[in-house]
Amino acid sequence: MTGAGIDTALLEPLARQGLTVRRPASPLTEDLLARELRGAVAYLHGGEERATARALRKAHKTLKVVAFLGVGYENFVDVAAADRLGIAVTNTRGAATDAVATFTVAQIVNANLGIPRHLGERVPGWQGSDELPHELAARKVGIIGMGANGRRIAEILRRGFGVRVSYYSRTRKPEAERDLGISYLSLLDLAASSDILVVMVPETGETRSMVDSSVIGRMPEGAILVNTARPAIVSPGALYTGLEKGRVSMAVFDGFYGRECEEAGELRRDFPDRLLVTGHIASHTAEAMHRMVRQAVKSIENVLTRGSDEHEVGTRPRPRF
Image (cartoon, rainbow, N blue to C red; front, side, top):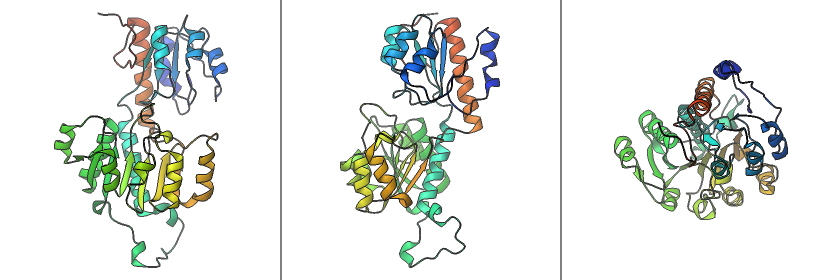
């Protein structure tokens, strides 16, 4: 098991099956992970390490299941390799939807009202009326991605604040449009019409750098970018230009680019007051973590006893019942 904030009492069902839970120190390199997985039958993935094809091959004689804590497994587990090796991969879709949506809306409120820059100030020190923030109901919010998280964000914004919401998704969601009163736009049109642009898609080969210069270049001057998905979905170079030219007034990230990204250092150096960065904590509430761990533990039990689980994300052949 890897990851922080996990209540080990929730792993008791595995202990009752005679399994011993091992919790290695992190972070894990590919070699360390391969060593830790040797002889393991299940792997509860709650950390930031990459379960590569090489690491999985080293463990394939015993490893039956990788239970990923969260939804966006694509950049952390080589599912294609797991499929070839007959290893089940599961995720915890839906378990953290409320936590992620609530956190994202909170960051929208933070950025829209400029709360971070006023913390500790006894008086606001306004220089003119043009500095006053806008109420959310007066803003137009665009959401990239209308999965469970995107829909919940839209629901809170529409029903809680009366915000005008539009969205872009690979497939249209007529039911969400009808139920929530939201509208579908192309990606570029969404960027052009949004005072606040929210990124809520998983990181894949298709979505990496999806928010590039063509998207940021269409945003209204002074717009806010909120990315509580994965940082790589937003091109760091395009973001730098957007901040430099004032197209983006503030950028919000939950998790930031790695140290190997030179542009990440430049962003932090040149725009410290216009970046609001947290450490990938959107799903980290006690309730969400408990739901995710319970769901992951149940998936491990199902694969080890029945051979499959309803939360599998790969395409490996599964037994029929």
